[in-house]
Image 1: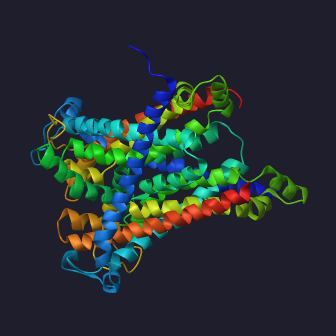
Image 2: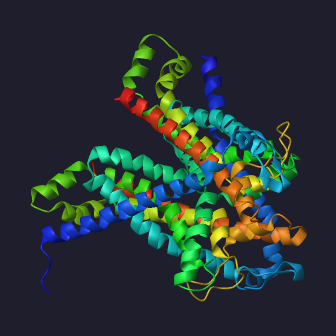
Image 3: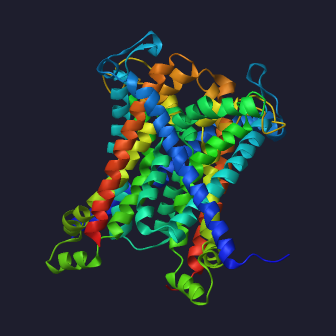
Amino acid sequence: MNQDKLIALALMTVALSAVTGLAVITVFIFKEGVPIIVDAGLRGFFLSSDWDPAAGRFGILSMIVGSLIVTLGAMALGGVFGLSLAIVLTQFCPAKLAAIIKPVVELLAGIPSVVYGFMGVVTLVPLIRTYLGGPGLSVLAASIVLGIMVLPTVTSISVDALQAVPRSYWEGSVAMGATKWQTTHMIMLKAARSGIVAAIILGMGRALGETMAVIMVAGNALEVPGSLLDPVRTLTSNIALEMGYATGRHREALFATGVTLFVIIMIFNTTALVIARRGAGKRGPK
Amino acid sequence: MRRLSPAISQRIAMGILWLLTLATIAVLFYIIFYILIKGLPHITWEFLSQAPRSMGRKGGIFPMIVGTFMVSGLAVLIAAPLGVGTAVYLTEYTRESRFTFLLRFGADCLAGIPSIIYGLFGFVFFSIALGMGLSVLSGALTLALMVLPTIIRTAEEAIRAVPYAYREASYGLGSTRWQMVTRIVLPAALPGICTGIVLSLGRSISETAAVMLTAGSALRLPQSAFDSSRTLALHFYILSREGLSMEKGYATASVLIIIILVLNAFAYWLMRRFIRRAY
């Protein structure tokens, strides 16, 4: 009997690893990053676009704006494509075909982000430069590359949400003479709404956090972009680009950039979790 | 304006949806074939077995292959027992409560943290505070935290899918809870658990930002877990970003893609086996 209690205790300790990890990460990132935010003042840090580490000026406004714009662009694309894929997979596609398409989408999630970035540089960027003008390395290029990268996230969570809708909803609608498409957009999408919203918010979190691919295609200029064809620097790329040689206050400022990113992502993810959970609780028995 | 008839609007909607689906699949195949066609011709035995010369312009990628598997393998070795242990605790040893809610919430949050933040954390915590420097071990510990939520979630799903009757039968024969878990539940859930582990391995191999800040970018062959090592993904990034060699870049990317393809295929095969056995 005692042995069983001991094992339970040991397993409980192991189970605390994820929460402990989260706590330690939070503490260390904040400990390194918060002092300089306090030092520079909220206005000097968040509301200034003047990033000049050599002169000790650390304003990250242009990067916050850059990150948000690129993320919105990515979601416009990844959301539409990802959701379409989820609808096709769950509503229109024969089960055998779905069994082939699904692993293909999972593979899309498995490709390293540097490969996406590289493909963006060799194919997309020249296209944009030639046909649309500008340097090619741009908000648009970053949005497209990120859109493709977050698509699997949107698809897989939307698929789960759509599959969780009771079969009887679908049957009821079709029995009343609705077409498959009417059933899909009037019944299924409505019933799975909270899951789909959660999928899109989680996708945004992914896009916001992606680093290497964005560095390669976004151009990384330190300005608020004026158009889709302008280069842009995101919070993540700022960290990865400068961490290699930063020391002292400069490095602290990069950690502060990390703190900003961390807080934005936590807000996104908690919102998604709450929405998903509320949606799951609302639904009646199958 | 007259409304479209339901049949026609269905046609249009399905046309658009299928078009978007096919476009997505086309993009995937385009990426894979583009890289493989440009890269495969440059993969030779020498490329796989030699060290790079002149910063990677010449020579091979042997140290990076070793480094990649050291970092990722170690990460998974660390994360797997923790993840599976957590899953066992959540499914077999406790009831839903505030405490389990907290555990799950922690794992969910961890899953959402971007890799660059893991990199920053690993750098100040493992590399500096714990004095590991830029090393395989520091990179592996960082990646272990990163893949932990994936392993927990897949293991939990796999364990939950084991029919309840198995547990009752085991108890009926007089086994203790631990015997039931180790001899009945875990073996039955093993393929599902392995799927999660294999996918985590793939994710560790693909990761760049986090290992860049923790494992460093040394070109030497790492002799132990305390040496710095450059992974394949980072090597590819440096090759293409600094314009060192397109040929070697494509070849390195091909090796990466082939590893990911093999791992995904293996995970898929395990999953199919698991599904067939569970139902």
